[in-house]
Image: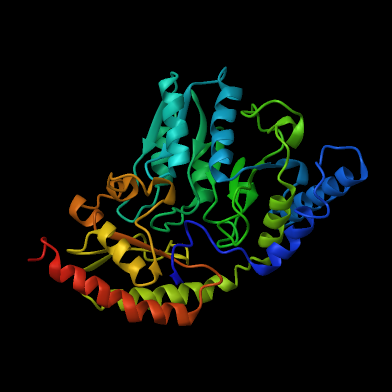
Length: 375
């Protein structure tokens, strides 16, 4: 199997599994228990929190662990909205956010909140001036993701933070952590996830700037500084910390070279359109439309040939609707239906890319020949 769907999830590193194992077997106590087993779990939990805070450049008490980016996004947006309701009723986000952001915002809209979804350029970039223009005296929250999960566009977060002025600013950095530089000074709330950087599934976090108002959305206990109730996933949190500690921005230069090699091989087919910016792009994502080749047919045919890819967000893969990201970028519907997302990771090898290039062009060429669009 050649796995090129790393924006959906990544393989857990061996070192991460080894770090987690004691907390699945020997030190499995509840971190809220007072006995020795519980204290050992609590120490591991807090060590992990301190390690993650050090990598982010924040205070350990500003980190709340969750079940993943979807929950973190909901806590950031709904929690801040509830806390700030007395100050205003307006939210600003972009048209290309992850479904976990867009659906949370849509729910708030049904509850009476006013929402502005700013458009993006043809390259999938948010214009900070558009964010500034969307603000009203009642705007309390702006949420714009750092790296888009479908096309890899890297947003100008510092400029958007400045444009947001006094509004609380949240960014979904699930596709960015460990892949691009992050500056906590640019945000008030930052979402991150474990399984996007070779950690386990089912764990993530939200960095909350000290003093940022937020109402807990999961209640029933005093865990996580009373911001998120529930028994902490100690093994998962230890795995997240280990994965982040192993992540290296230096490695992403190699990943970018592999992505460009893959891109050149795809473009040799002719009739290939690559989506996203040429410059402001994360290293690990390549989204392309192959004219005349339906993306669902391509994914299934490539899977049968041993290559795993996707057509966009894994959270929306069961949907038959065109990609909302490509729609927002103005991609014609016929090309949107032909889009394939290839995504790499720090563990992707040159042999895998060479193997993919020995398979993918042939599969896509055969599909193009039998496509009713090209006959």
